[in-house]
Length: 112
Image (cartoon, rainbow, N blue to C red):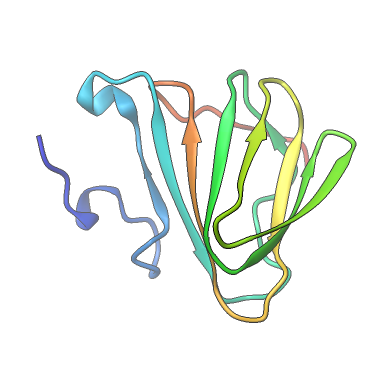
């Protein structure tokens, strides 16, 4: 099975959206996040499953539980299940991440 960008794209940025693993019979969901706007990012939220963040481009400030971590291109971070987390683009320039959710579906509870 193949999906094109049009199958998962959300919004005007061609690298912003997600693919639920259930579409492939897989136990992981992949999110694509990109922004040029410094200070922009997902609000504080939580999942009932683990998440892995891969920084493909740029710099980000992550909050994972009580820890604040500055990350850059090539870094990989871990967000444990049930631990609130968020991140923002530190700039300068574009932030591009691939976020791997250990669940066949994307389930998120926003806290902010």
